[in-house]
Amino acid sequence: MKIDVEKLMEEARAAAQGAYAPYSKFRVGAALAMGDGTVVRGINVENRSFGLSNCAERTAIFTTLTAGNKDIRAIAVAGPDSWEPLPPCGACRQVMSEFCPAETPVFYDDGKGGYVTSSVGKLYPANSLMDLSKKQR
Ligand code: THU
Image (cartoon, rainbow, N blue to C red; front, side, top):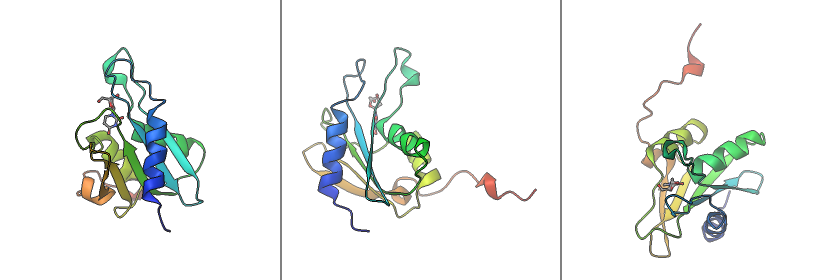
């Protein structure tokens, strides 16, 4: 499946405009390219209890799971308020590794108007948790 990276990054940038980030004022948007050609967006959703904030990447993944579609083929992350590259946080990397094969591409803002190309496997090289669904019972 051919991914139009520019278009996916534009989707992530557009999503970021709707971020709920009144505390950090740091808006983030994510866009998932799905196997059926659709795009699923996510935003960061903060809370006055800061630890409850949810990143844009996880919002997008949870949204598509809720819709019953797990077939994520690529992930884009945009942070229009970022002045540095914006790789996903550790929690998001682990959630990505739960649902996406290692070769799934991840594109994130480079902080200069472009993007960095990575993958779920590069961002989360050693799967630190056993796959408990494979446990023999
Ligand atoms: N954030 C994301 O949504 N994704 C990232 O990859 C990095 C950080 C959010 C969390 C918080 O709402 C704000 O950005 C500042 O950390």
